[in-house]
Length: 545
Image 1 (tube, rainbow, N blue to C red):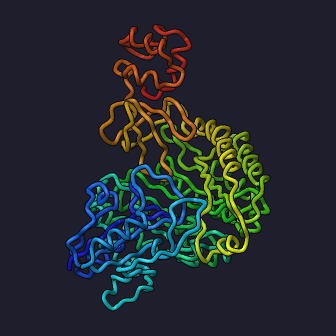
Image 2 (image 1 turned 45 degrees about the horizontal axis):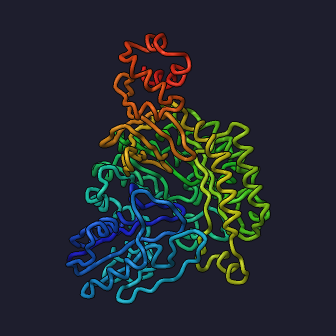
Image 3 (image 1 turned 180 degrees about the horizontal axis):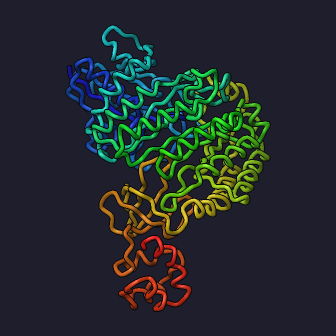
């Protein structure tokens, strides 16, 4: 039996699957098909677009994808509803199955209402499509999996990596848990709709999957499929954090894949951190011990307006978020090559119940105070809510005429970017910091845009000539990106364009450096250049010693 598996990519609150990420779910589907004896051909939607090939000589076609949160993508674009329908119409003789978030609801941008799509000529699998094929053909579209099943198919599905267009530069999203530890949920959240209550996967299952992925060439992992990494195993510990479980998980991953290059995580609940501070401090210490630099704990603060928080049943209040930010800064702020090991990130969401003009100012004031007090945030996500069916927010939108004030939204978003993001990024990635393993993704004129694998990887622009994975040194800053030069940094070989890109080095200073080269050593350079030119270069030269 031949099956074409089309990766349409997913983006959920706790799962990323747009390149360079590969979601755990697509790996599960691949593994289930292999165990059932299918001959599987794996294709990404981007590869299909690039080749403009929409017809497949296959008895079975499985399409998996969909988004439930708004995102901006550099290396791939999630499948469109029109593309799903195009595949269905072009392959009338194939048995076609559609699964993932798009099987339940579909939208692609913030500030929009999701629709419930119909796929005439295809079978819509609203359950876990990997479970559907694990039990195939005696299965139904609402089939649900178990972690015993996941532990089997995930190991079989590790082979998919070698077929990914980005291989070996792929970041494997690892499933740690599903659902949320809270007894009630936020008004807009799709996590309870898709996954329900908290259900933690066993340590052994995750570690064995990492081992299989490592054998298949994976060197980058993200424990992202979790609504709150700090609450891992809380469902089996009377709701309490389990520092030992996180220690076993992180140390186990390091043991089975000692050559890993990236180990990151993502979501955490700030109110849970402050409620169980003693236990969570131990957990954060474990993460910082075993992770790699540049990691982020994303806080779904969503708003700092207490009226909005209350009306949308958002569990964390401003004072709790502030305390959690302080805790993560204290433990995770240590640096490797100038880059912090672990920092908090903040998610802000607009279009919520109870929102007013004052909400925008309250959000700005909170963030400005964080900056002024010297605390670090790795990134601030500012998004418009996507309204999904069967959420409390969708019922509110149906009963009330609510419309986001785009002018107000854009004004305050720009103000945060200018007043907070701009100075913050200079603190997080200071001049001279080295970002390891950056990969070129796009070229525009003489500038190459790069990102390392990881959680919310920093965007890098460079005038250096790069052809593959490179270590890059920060030389200047944008609002949400940095300018960098390739390491090792050799002042006697660096180009004129690269010199111009360094903060504090204008045309005349770049010319002075080139005219006075070669420099025998840093001391000699200090003697040869004027004080201001040397000062602009000093942090870079120190890194290279």
